[in-house]
Amino acid sequence: MNDIVKTLVVLVLCCGSLSAQQFQSLSHSPFGGLALPPVALPTPHGAVVAGGGPLAAQMKTYGVDGFTFSSDAESAKNEAEAALKSLGVAVIASRVYRDASWTHGFTIEYIGGSFLDFESYTSGGYTFSSDAASAMEQTKANFRAAGYAVVLGVVKRDASWQHVYKIDYVRQGGGWHPRPRPDQGHGRVKVMESSTYRAQRQAEWAMGRKVHELKSQGALVLDASVIRVVGGYKFRIRFKGGR
Image (cartoon, rainbow, N blue to C red; front, top):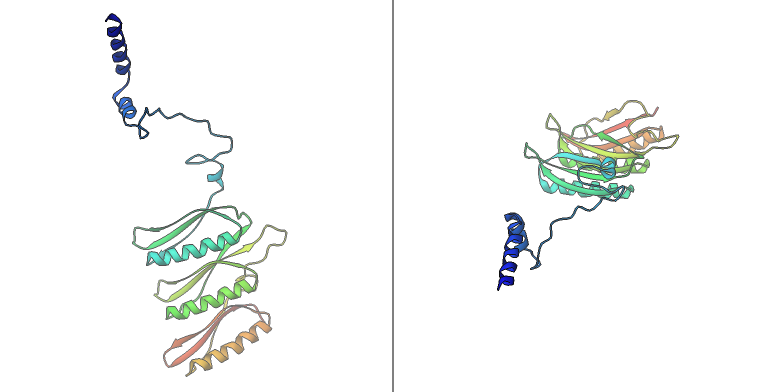
């Protein structure tokens, strides 16, 4: 009997040495047994830890804001993410957010691409968003034909409520002779605007002839489009260089 009493006393003392929090964790183990306290494992050399480390030091961010709808921000994020991956960078994370003004934007965090040099081109104003979108696609094609990678193009309203488009593109430097920006190196940007044509087809035909003429003179045509105006149509060409 004395041995039984001594055993019970020892068990009571052992349980009493546990705090209430520890006892609760022991009795509520998800595996039905005793939940052991967490063990701090050593961090391998060069590994990334939360809040910093070698990976965080290399992280870069690309983002665009000012989208009215989250679906537009999501679509633009996917386009930019695919373009960055095609340039050989490693995308770590991306997200769409809503800011304090209730507009949407996106950010992409990536590693690599130290040889990339991001630039932006912003067009003149268009009355209609469809005209701006059409011109933007042509400008993207012009940049790609000149050997530059287009990351993203978006149409937005400027301060005067005109529609403009912005294109983010990349030139690959890092060598002894990095390529110049496509919207520089030919002097200032020039804008040519035609007289008014009654028919859209007439304006398009005249614009095509003028674009061909400018290119034959060594000009870099940034964008060319037909725009609707009161009384008919005009064409507008933005270019640099030429005779």
